[in-house]
Image 1 (cartoon, rainbow, N blue to C red):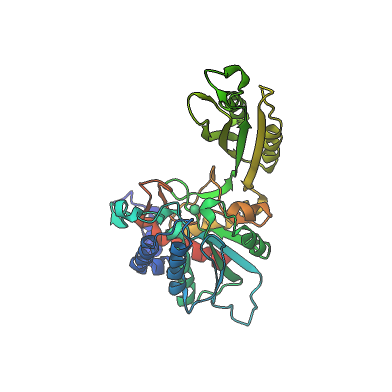
Image 2: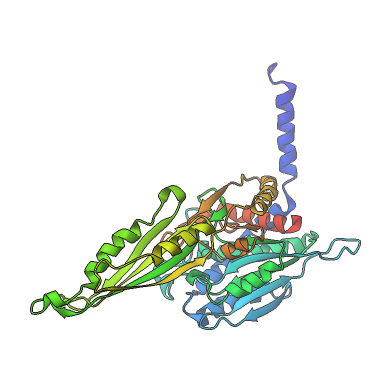
Length: 404
Ligand SMILES: [Zn+2]
């Protein structure tokens, strides 16, 4: 046809060229997709709730077995939790004897929020284009992707300039009390941190900012009394708390992204006793470190309405916010064309939930979070990942490591 100009013909040719030059790492990841799925299955079927160290350790053993021969393996005791794992990968060197220069830290966690036995009602399964199961999205798939990404670099002999360490914490879902110091210590020695947590939305957005997360416990002590015989001599901790809760909820500043959410309240002993004690647990989220100070001042300023009651406040931020720094933006700009090479658009968003990336970003180490699976339903019964995004996410992580 006359209108089928040179341009159209060229477009046809360039499409052919694109098909012929599928990124070699992407091709590798596609070829290995069934192996990656089998690995994810092994990890998911070894249930690993944070509070069950023995179960978490069995999950860690699966990771160790799968990395044997390709990484130096170290574990660190996790106290009441499972053990934390560090894998230092043995990766191809640049020719001409260029020495490894600096270090890249990949971060993940082996624990999940799901108790042992969840598999009975939420078995691992592949259906409707997804993998389903407890912890599959948050974040066992991300761990499998990383190990296979390192295998790709080794098998394809892709040189890597830096030392590459994967640290897998056993207590992330409960705020990383035991692993935090380890994470911070190694992050300080790293040029960049890649966090294998789930991505955001069903198009796999990275998380370039995360709110800081904390919790406060407010305890009111009143004075117990018989609700009938001696009502006037009592001071109800419950009534006092009810008034305080209004005030505390008012610390929320939606325009600034600050949320203060009383999530648990408990108090009193019997209906015919004026309550002597009441406790509230309050979740707080802040986009900026300075907002954490604002909340600390607000909580410290609480005074009882009823002078017969006493208020005690404890708590604070346990994860500082991950702010979208220049270093974070630079990492994102590096990742975007690499994603393009493997045929996907890579966008970014901010997240309300925290991760261990909050600690590393707060130290000023460029941190890119949400590099794990594409899916939805973290901590929910529809937790699942998209099978069609397994290969490109694995390839993206490998390419990032090779480019840093
Ligand atoms: Zn997670």
